[in-house]
Length: 300
Image 1 (spheres, rainbow, N blue to C red):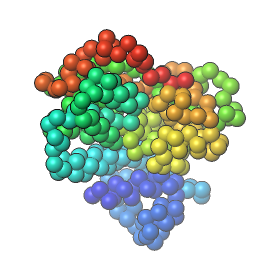
Image 2 (image 1 turned 90 degrees about the horizontal axis):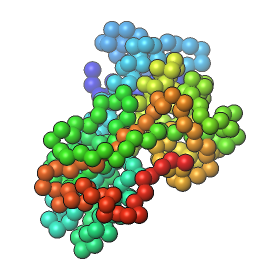
Image 3 (image 1 turned 45 degrees about the vertical axis):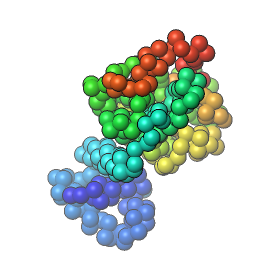
């Protein structure tokens, strides 16, 4: 078993059929079927149930798909981080912030510019909190913004000083004309038959968190759109082609109806993290006191 076998399993799961997966992978359908049987033999059981309209994961398949996506994401983080670390260190007079795709990042970056106007400021956006923390450990950045989602292992921050910036609900985006758009709150169970936009490459664990929450609600989300950022995802949802999850303020997702989940199944916790001796430690500690116009980002 290797990474390419995990990519095959994910492609079949995301495509929903052997024929579409074969076209995506640019191999013959018979060849893909043979490879899939070998993978299933290696893992000890069938990963998919074959149906006339396509394939659906078995219980074993759901487990393998979830873990495979996690492993491939971690491998992608390894490549991205290695390339970043191979670059020359930034000049010592620069102050650097790192984070994931989170509304807190531009707000904190603006605050740094106000407090340290004579320092060159750098901001690194990474696809995962693990990648951001690796930049912190290697002193590429002085301050990190990281996220945590339910059912996904939180990033390890024990060696750092940590400040909790709060927990906010992850919202479900619907087209304005959707059957549930008039409701104040909805449940995941009501979305079991919907087509979904998969969280983008910088979702930092939100995709896995969503999949686990949906499986707990009794279904596997039918992801049919992949690689979209929040703006593109909002356009797809607004056109009525799918539903999606949004961990951003409403003004970044125009044209859609954002709904809370009644039982709080999905949320995002944001933390500010810095090492001992960070040049931004003082700024991080007195963020509220030093920024009278500070506003916590809220989803509308």
